[in-house]
Figure (cartoon, rainbow, N blue to C red):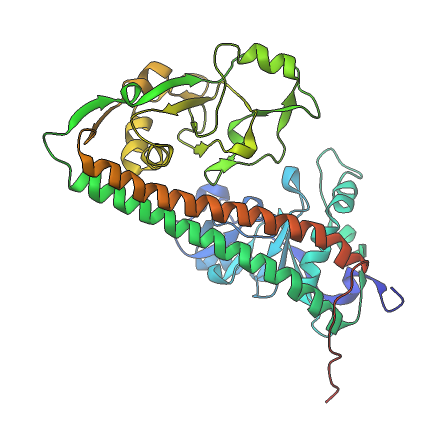
Length: 403
């Protein structure tokens, strides 16, 4: 670490600043125009366009001091998402940021912009602690960010470290994009085979007819623990599988109590039914045992395989039927009996149906294999990150030649 030195961010960046809400507030957002990046768009490691807002040229001119450039680093500075960090989204430029997001622009002669991103990600816990100082709401002020110190090796080593981590992120991104393509292929095949080419003589069945069981999870609220059997909630359904980040746990005794009559099994398909409707995921072998909350339905396949049932529930065809059954209470919800009674036309007695299910299984298995690889790469990246950013693990690099 003798070649590493500490610097305040204000001494190695050319810009640190956040924006504001455009005149007119959120009601003035447009359906197209210049991107306005908000805190929900900034995730750890990656940018998401979910909920991306747009503003017109006049509104953008009012935010001309926070124009996002290609190599900028974006940092959430307020609220529950404080300290989340990612690179600027090249595909959504030109862009501005609102008051909840800060732009950090590195001085390229001193600081590699990718190294800056990974340094902030490695320092997330410190930034979270810093954000708790002096206010009722977590926030990082401009002064806090400017005076925050990071440890830097020479620029060539910064670039070498960033390249190692970026190569992992690029592979993760590629696998996510492959899965989006596979999901789109499945949706196209489903629409072609079971909507456009549907036959009048196909059987009309209800959802309850094609599954062994359709049950809600438990509405009992067991005591939560820091370890034990995972207690699944809707927020843990992501990308068709179970994400254990932030999950709570219950004891074995409580698990036997809440799932006394039946237990979730490998291959069960879940769909959210309260609040956010229609999120679908499949329970895998690594998820077992698992307790399930009342805000999800658990479907056990019978007349179809798991893969077909998964793609059926995710299809726009089913999602439209499902959302049409929503009832209104404190939150929107789908009653169990309404989900059971959704009618479908399927060629259950046609031998070709088995072959078509096999094609869905092939797509499903490719998606699951990619998800497993993504998890492996993310674990490797998360293990390497603190070691590389502290100098505990060094990388080989070539010293840049002086012109």
